[in-house]
Length: 327
Image 1: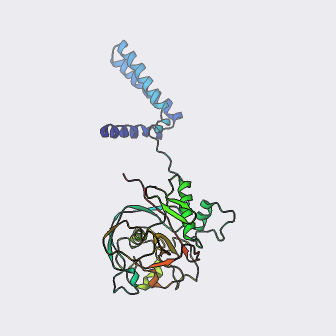
Image 2: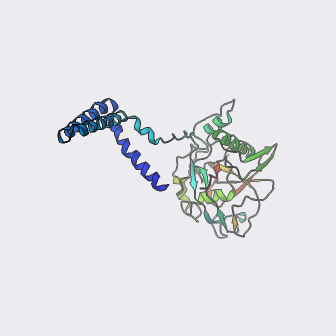
Image 3: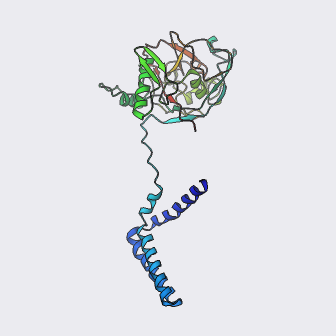
């Protein structure tokens, strides 16, 4: 089967070369070549054989010339679905990392330890936080979001973010990840729609293979190049993607706005874990990343903060992840 597929692809590539000759030109050229070729055969062969070859060559030339432009349809490639602005996803390869901050990390807090090994499966994450424009388009708001440019969507509760994930899944043709009943949310982990990242997924993606305080190193002054925070933001959230990305191509993981995670807040388990999802219940949800009004220490990869799920803050947004089908 594989050999047949390769041969067919080679045949199609050969035929597509006819595209370089438009039909209006290929038809007379092809017929002319057939007449000349057949005439040469008539001179060198008996009349009966020559006549038969003449008809065969002439017909073949006419057929190939006629097929000059349409032949490309033999190998049609479906057009890719248009990507909505702000919805570009980045594949995050699965792996094991050291989650949390060591006791001697500058600016660290007790709730960021103990450092422990976590295995994370492959997933996809939005390259940038959900923007005001994307939120407005997906939620079909009657009242447009003010300042609907490419700034992160803020002032949303945890439940607002979860509802957006379901609406985005529906819009893109995926099964919703969340079953929502009032304030109760159940995660359908078999669904392949959009959802909030777990705390472990968020830190793994932010670190992008690093173990330093920030993905750009340990020195705070380097943050001015990579993040929006209190020293350079002019006290406001900035358009997404304006600072360099981390090594895995994700923007604004440090600073600009905090981001909601799925997990209820609770202490870490020091044992090695695989795809942890946090405690089964709690009072506060975890947020990550720091924001435009915070100091560098709060932007560290390991820093974890907590917010009541009903709160809406102007320095708090979110981004979505999804798990693609496994090949």
